[in-house]
Amino acid sequence: QVQLVESGGGLVQAGDSLRLSCVASRRTFITNGLGWFRQYPGKEREFVAAIRWRDGSTNYADSVKGRFTISRDNAKNTVYQQMNSLKPEDTAVYYCAAGSTLLVVANHPTYWGQGTQVTVSS
Image (cartoon, rainbow, N blue to C red; front, side, top):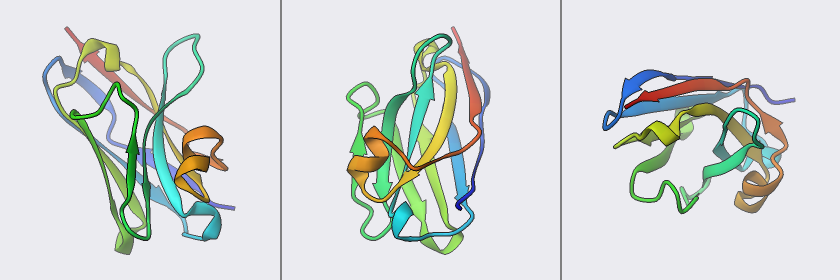
């Protein structure tokens, strides 16, 4: 079992930046990749970004390319998501997710965190 713990959410204004963190309790072959999803009220979770522990390869949803950056600190088992130029439509609950590959993380993660709320006011 792997636990994922998110932090860093909050209330910001449009145009501001925020950095989310996700600490994984351990790294195994099942969690070669970590990523982020977000969920709007009444909607399904949607993929945002993912990164591979081994080489830092990344994958992004088109809606966040150029504004969000995912990175990792292998020594701390931590993945970050830097979110710049935030918009009100970025308001959502953001979830950390883990899977064996970038493809798995993006489509059907094996593990989920509890989520952290990000609210962007206009």
